[in-house]
Amino acid sequence: MEIINRKQRMASIARKLRRESKTVGFVPTMGALHEGHITLVKEARQMSDIVIVSIFVNPTQFAPNEDFDRYPRDLTADAAMLAEYEVDYVFAPETSEIYVPGFSTYVYVDGLTETLEGASRPGHFRGVATVVTILFNTVRPDLAFFGSKDAQQVGVIKRLTRDLGFETEIVVVPTVREELGLAMSSRNAYLSEEERAKASIIYHALRDAKLAFKNGERNASTIAQIVEEKIASEPLARIDYVAVVSNDDLEPVEKIEDSEVLVAVAVRFGKVRLIDNVVLNRKQ
Ligand code: PAF
Image (tube, rainbow, N blue to C red; front, side, top):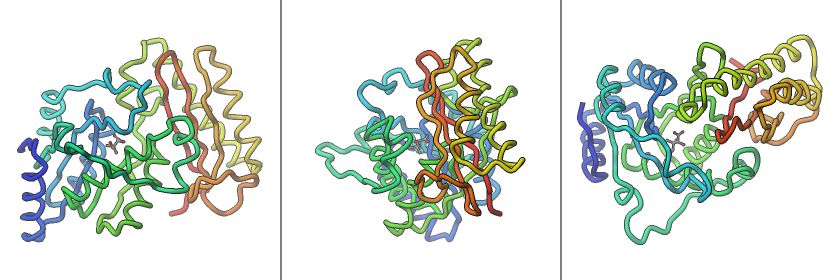
């Protein structure tokens, strides 16, 4: 496994791999790797000849009041973990390699980015879309792997991939959960032991939504209420939003009919903001 810091070197390896007709599977991350990331890597390993993982804590997707400075960083531990899973290249650039001096070009995905996470974290998706575009341009992957916990991010990346004409297939991998049901996230490391145990209420609330749907409930606001009430029953939880929206365009729905519906939540436990979701009516 080679660790690459320079964008030019990463791009030149990517060109060579394309000339050799190797399928490149790419897993973009911000490091602080956990089992969720490893699941993406394993999927990439199965589906591609060459696996490239990027580790880059992207400053432009954090608002000034967010946790950019204290975001967990440990390249040595991350690299050791990736070596175990037969990753071929780790791309870990400095900020100035991605955001060159005088940088002033941003990617903005209209429509999908104003609601949910976009409403709570203005500018977040502009940062995500910009860095993913730069990374895709550098790595030119055949396949790129993302976790479904970040459902809106997946929608934004699928849209930019299509709109900007990247020849990359976006592979979405199911959320990996801790024993009690909490979705894996690098930010779980900030939770106290008590908060971590109590945060599994989010998973239980989403499971209740799924059960209500299975039992015939089709009213979106009733589903939202079921989720809200369950989460609110936990005194440590502060709800940011509970949304029941179309999984396609993230527009609110009233009645759940044939198409896929995303039940998405953001909840604070202490200083930590957690997101999770479930899809009702999942096709395939
Ligand atoms: O999901 C993440 O870890 C980040 O948003 C991503 C896709 C690596 C872009 O910085």
